[in-house]
Length: 425
Image (cartoon, rainbow, N blue to C red; front, top):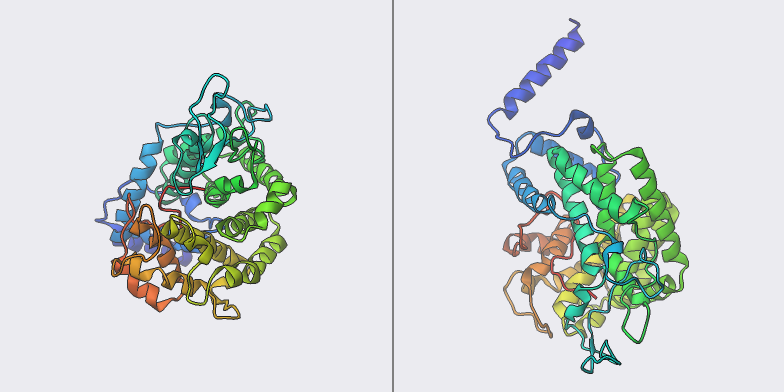
């Protein structure tokens, strides 16, 4: 045996000794998968890789977090897959493969009759969710598809349990790839209003608020997940490229990109995420750079408040919600060499100030002083984590006082902000 071989054997022996005594909650990941750093769009692939290495060495805090993640993933194993073709009626255009959702804050003003089955005209009640939107459309199913794909892919990446990867692959193939069940890559009929609009630009937020998590789920599976084939990778790449084309060129995409509140911020997040994932680095870079003067400067006030979001009946939700988009966009910025956290507007506007504005309410030291129909303190937890990671001393001090969201605080495993409360629109 050569000296190099003897050294390798010795190192393996030492590593085995160091990890002895740590009871793994789930099976270890295959060696081949461990060697690959995922090319994620929002999450930091290098950081995930290092986190997994710490986990494999028995870090007790990470193992507790993985148990919580595995619990979430386990709930998806006997659910789905979901598909756009299951809704009781097709989208207004008549194609069952077109995605359909209904405007959440619009309500019938009359009692439905045979001549007026919807109870039209519909009227807006901001912040009050019409339960109709959760039946008869694709809205809940797409949320389940996105959430399950993300949880399952992360669980596979950290545990190596094949069942998680195979389920994630089934979920994604059914929604996006299989000819009989796939969704067309457009949002022409998102957030329609009965008897008023067949679809609206504002409906893009159904995807922009969380589809970048799916991009990261795909990147995780691409590191060698069992049951995730080259055909699957090629198919998702093509779907994403087609969807990016629709997002850039459609009238709805142009309108949503011009929005001056959270809709515009989330549009930029989706545009930059898709651009980065499909190899259009220049578009991703331009989108992040433009967000400084197009989003942060006009949408964040000198004191860190977000006036457009404070005007809502759910001002806490929308203030944290908008910052989910900003912090995820800043994460994409890291991949293309832009530090969005470092930007200061002409009057001192910055992402750090916007997060700091939330800290008293996020830590429970003071009441939120603006209108809010349902205050959920944990809605700010991820964005405070993001600011702390980016170097905000006040946010770092606040982290121990944050309220964990339902299911536990998983920041250590997936350090990118999620929308932690469920209201949409």
